[in-house]
Structures are given as C-alpha cells and as structure tokens.
Length: 280
Ligand code: NAD
Image (tube, rainbow, N blue to C red):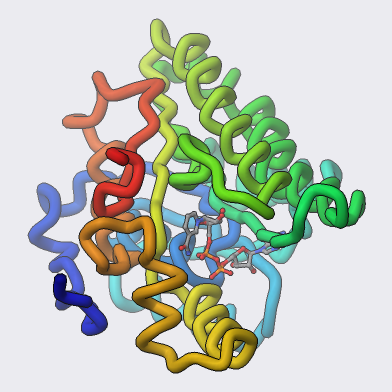
C-alpha cells in the first residue's frame, strides 16, 4: 500500500469551470480566513463571484487575503469578523453582507470547530460551542437568506459537513451530532427551496490538508511519541482508503460546480469527498 504524502498540484481553477460562471453573483463564506473556507472563497472569486469573507484571527493577515483575492480575480471582496458561535454574530454577518454586496446569492456555511473527549468527560461548554458554531449558525444564516433567494428564484446554499456527518468515530460526540444535524438541515432546506431555484447540498470531506490538520499532526506526533509519517498513516488516514488528503482546491472546485448552472438539479445531497472512507 502506498502512502501519499505529497499533495497533488492545485486544481487549475480556470480549467474547472466555464470562465466567470458566477459573475454577478454574491457569496458569503463563513470561516473563510483559513483552510477549506478560504479554498472555497478563492474558487468562487475565481469564477467571478463577489465574496464576503468571515473568520477570526489576525486582522492584518485577513486584509492581505482580501486584497490578494480582489486583485487576482477582479471581484469585490469584503470581510466580517463576526463571531458565529453567537446568534447575534450570525445576524451581524448577514446584515453586513447585505449592506456590502446587496443580495446574498450563495451562502457557504463552513465555520466549524472540534473537540475530542469521551462522552463521560465531554465538557458541556464545548458541546454548546460546537453545536452553536457548526449547526445553529448554519440554521440562523439559512433562515436569514432563504426567503430572499426564493423570492429572486435563484440561490445556492452549501453546508460544509464532514464524513462525520455520515458515520461516527468515538470521542467526537458533539462534532458528529452537529455534522449529522447539518446533513439533516441540508435536506430540509433543499425541500423548502426546490420549487424556487434554490439548491442546498452538504459537502462531506474526510481529512483535508488545512492548517488545522497540519497542527494536529505535530500535536499527535508529540502525544504518541511517533513520527509525522506514522501519525498521517496510522492515525489520520487510517480510515481513508486512498491514503491521501483531499485539498482545499478540490473542495473549491466542487463548491463552484454546485453553485453553477450545471449543479441546478443536485439538491439535498450529502457528497463525500473522503477517498472512499464512507464506502466502508
Ligand atoms: P480551519 O481551522 O483551517 O478554519 C476554520 C475557519 O473558521 C477559520 O477561518 C476560523 O477563523 C473560522 N472560525 C473559527 N471559529 C469561528 C467563530 N466562532 N466565528 C467565525 N469564524 C470562526 O478549519 P478547516 O479544516 O478549514 O475546517 C473548515 C470546516 O470544514 C469545518 O466546518 C470543519 O468541521 C470542516 N471539515 C474539515 C475537515 C478537515 O480535515 N480539515 C474535514 C471535514 C470537515
């Protein structure tokens, strides 16, 4: 069995879709200052959409990301630092987006956090945070934008769930519950939007190469006293049959496809991007 440590070359964003397929559309991507959210925001901008970024972190770094995306793709790029673990933060984000971009055509609910502990030791505040950010924030944002999308006859909602929206692992009770809930919310949203040109799908990644995962590798290596290569093979990619991380560019390309006209009949789906994990 071979272990793929080298990442594949980035997907050519320009090759992934018809040029500027999303020109004139506006998108909000939650948790997009890093990782998967940034990959999706970048892909949507490459396809011509104006984008509102969101996330926590260093404001200077965020400004750099904003400037770089706007310059590279010639689209409007805004930023909201709203904390989406609070309902008021989600409402602020939506208001900000409507002020800055006008209508919201595309909503990507991506922000999420994780905590790993056995159920009998799982802190209630971590449960509340994970459910609040990974599930309630998606519901509140969807509730705020769905009516407008339906009345305009076009909309795309993408929920970044996880392979853990389809199967479970021990010690991830809150995360697995939230991601299964997000898949359920996806189906209901799809049914409610279906006759008005609004689609809603869940993207369910296995392990994706992001700063979050990169940090986990070193932590796990220290904790287990094993080297990085063994952490990747024996811990992280144990359940991922292709033994390779997905990349944020692959997720960006899928998100952009779902947001385009070719994706208009795909709705209510939970799409695994997991190298075969959930085929077990
Ligand atoms: P990441 O840590 O690289 O990025 C998380 C983003 O969310 C950042 O922009 C961060 O600032 C933002 N964020 C965190 N707390 C926030 C809050 N309270 N309010 C607003 N923004 C907040 O993580 P990632 O790996 O890119 O994960 C993104 C999503 O993908 C999550 O929902 C995660 O569950 C899901 N996912 C990740 C993987 C993976 O292997 N990386 C696999 C499956 C699913």
